[in-house]
Length: 144
Figure (cartoon, one colour):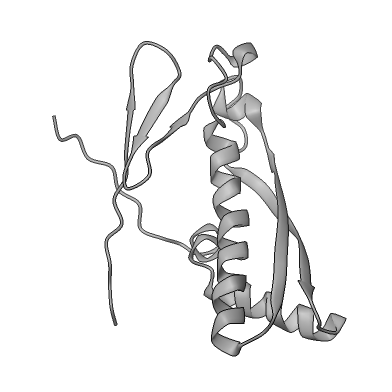
């Protein structure tokens, strides 16, 4: 087993702009209506985007490994969430997505059955999907 540790950081100041550090820094923000400056996607959009990106990336990895001529993959992801709970307006429910759906288009010379099997292989190997559907240990600690 080859375990790797992937590290990123987030830093926020007086606004909702979160500067994400890592190999490829980027910004997460809130829309103007939510008090932000709309300088980037919000955390929920970012979370869903990681699933879409991982599905596309795993599709490319698997196609390369199997020498499948994959012209492209498009993945649209959506999720249902109770914003009243996450905003503290109720304590009934949960803050996370209650359902997440991905709609995948595979551009390759494959039958529908082959595409379905290919997508199952992607889902099986996708670390983001795994973390969304399985219990992953999650800890937070004060360090300063």
